[in-house]
Length: 320
Image (cartoon, rainbow, N blue to C red; front, side):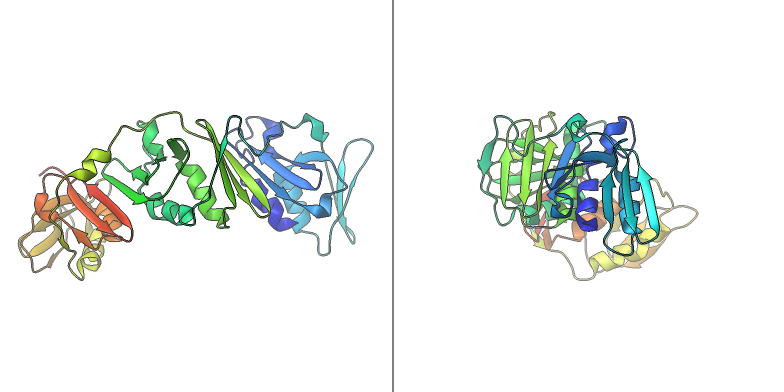
């Protein structure tokens, strides 16, 4: 029971703006929670005889503190009692009919075959999704018939995936929930405004971002001259990063025969046998080199292309 409560609790409203959305609804042997952006429902046969809504956080804490299987009763006055041995908790509740139930399938949705590589593709691009709210469309990943796209406004990446549904912008927070759930997806239902993922023990439904991505596919069609990423490059950069003088804009500088931080009250440099020049944000460079096996560093100051681990992308360097 506690595992399913925690599973569903991912979708409760933690801010308490609408009190009812901080509740879990128990109905027909299922649990449901919704925060208006997403809804999660899961099977809970242990509560099949009950029908009510109850504050999620307090209910979960009460069940967790029961040493044995908890006894759950709903009194005539509407309170829910959770007990185990001499331990008892009483919580307020409401009738389940008052809860804004959501159904699994979005309206006008079509079923999409759940590709075996769907979750893997999400895991590859998730680190590149933007947190910059000034460009709302970049807060999600664009899913087209052939690729998942993601950007953090300094890099753009894509990874192949087969998708027969509409072009959608899947919110980053939903992608993180899918990765946290980490269970096989049995089916996907999608419309232009929402999408649902079915699991063995429940489902997740989410609203999609309405902000459309620009068409960036042509950026990947440019001719590229790749070379292998040198062994030891990432570890050399990670050795320097703690000594970047500007913590708000840490940068790594490539120069003939060396790699360094910017100059400042603190700085660092290490020798490196190559003839490459460029300046890059340190955390972006670290992210890119975490996946790249081949790249085109000599195109700087134009975008640098890279590929590796099923991901291809481009990275914009910093100005000199």
